[in-house]
Image: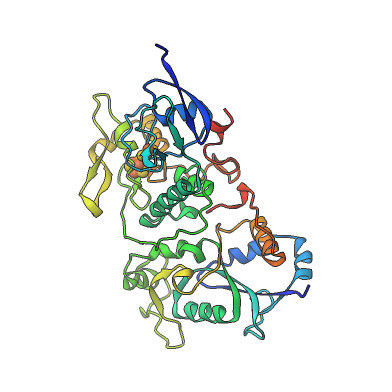
Length: 232
Length: 182
Ligand code: SF4
Ligand code: FES
């Protein structure tokens, strides 16, 4: 039995390895599907829904759905693009994203998706909820205004024994991703930088440097997010 | 084609968006061929002297005067454009949202580290002064806004492309680089 199978995304034929998710297969075949909570090397959990596609008229998250031979996937349709845009807009209004004063601006995945989907203004009212900044650690600060609770930091930033630096606190509307204050005192420089890098937005900031890359040279200044995948 | 009439104002903004309008450089000569300016800080016309086609709003609403001016613009302009992050989402002034107004005033006039000269501990209270609002509001939460041009400040090319499209009635085809939130 062959270990590859064929299916279609928006009519384009995709050759996938069996057991791959739709998202992985799309990426290998030069088709961009946006992601936020998904992170290479971490078991996908399908929480942000930005990677939603339509199969048999049902919405599914492409980061968790395995490929099947012959399936017809819709991704880049007007309806799905608008759904994705509405998720981006919801994230913008439920946090406080002051892009002009954010160190991650230009390298932020949420902002880049805002550009890609041409968000000129969110259709929802801004919440302006008061949120905290915790800057007591020596290397890192945590700005809750910007956290989208994707859990990427929780899943990837661990010490030698596998203990996590980040965890959930509170529930429901008060849910926050917080850093363990004791552990943060001894975090290595390397891991601290990785924490900032792995956060899709500017909620985890490595202290001491900021705005070091001039406008025009940052990741998403000239190239839309996903264009590297599409030119592959 | 008769010239379109444009008005502009700066509410709770830093005037950066207006600087960005001027940043269209020599294209300003083409612009005067296409438009005529009415009420605007650029020509210092203080009151509307005729109905305008396009009103360009910089800044959100942080006080009672901003609201009054914004409504005055809505009445006197057929199309309103929110120009820049402050007009669109409150921008940096909206970083005070969520902090009680009393705390803001105390920080600015009494307790802040740079407050040196206010020896009599006065908070501004003259009835001539506009009242601060509880929060800074995006313009479209106060009046209907027709178009939004993001950026802090918006790129001059974005302003130029959008204005020309609007004036000539053509589709806007914005290059990726010009739509930015910073
Ligand atoms: S801090 Fe960043 S990586 Fe962690 S949950 Fe929030 S947005 Fe995700
Ligand atoms: S990337 Fe698939 S649900 Fe978040």
